[in-house]
Length: 423
Image (cartoon, rainbow, N blue to C red):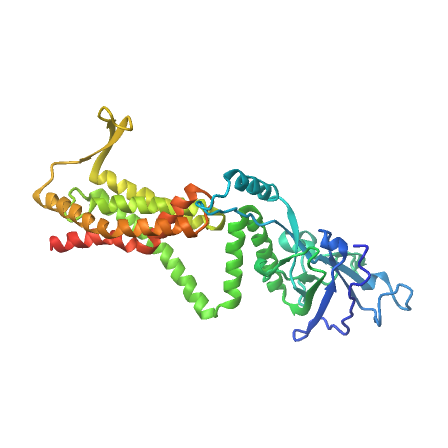
């Protein structure tokens, strides 16, 4: 920006190409220009030169040639969409719905506004074992960091040269550490770090950085949060614990898919329902649906993998019900509130053991309801009086899902009672 005269300048001397132990750090407190406080861009300009520099670059210095200078710049300001905000209210607080909708509309109108953010760390790395490659072999994420020398060639005239590769490694920067730039930030800290890097790491970091950025841009807030969590885990977790966690996660996914497959195979072959609590299956479908609706209601912060797994679980549990009973809609009796009602019939004539199972199932659910219903009623009153919600639908889904998370073990009781009675 034009109002950048007060920005700091510094010189690092005697940088030796290929010195893997050379690490340098400079700390500053930046006086943020007014234009940058109002969404303008701020750039870091870096000059690499073999010419000795005392105070600054001067083309009039003796021995200075343009070929001895390489200029690289990178933006210090990063632009991201303003985080989405959901206006919540206390449903018994008497707040006008029209006022809440108006405020939500104002917030939504700013959802596409791009704000500038600041990260206090910049890492500059110099690729210190540059590879020899064909001119048409430079492509992909690394291509933009290579600058060919316009004139210099070897004795044969067929081999060209490129300037040193300066790579700003932003892979480890987390969005949670970025702060918005505005008029309340007249000064900002900045730490610039330099060290050498191998071409192998350079290619890996460049590819990972581009892949993560593209995934974040396509996936929105949830994906950005997931990617940040991956980076945070890689930087803050003990390597052995990280390897163990990765192995357990892979095994968990494998066992979950095997459990789905085994469950389906078991129920496809099952012809009788002795010892099976059909009501528990129905309740489990209800629980899975409530959990799924809650995750979809908060889908901005939920991974798509979790949503997919939850949807598969609901489908399998619902299919189990069709193996136990026939469900259909029939006309309701005269005077009913709804024109149709749900009719549930057993698929076959029940045996004595199956009749006992149904009897114990009804008894178990009666006992469970004596505890579960008062708990649900009490928590509903508490949530309605003391918590805020987006609306009545969100209140119902959030309350039911919270109750399921806290007292979900209650749904296991009927099956335990049936197992005890039929032992």
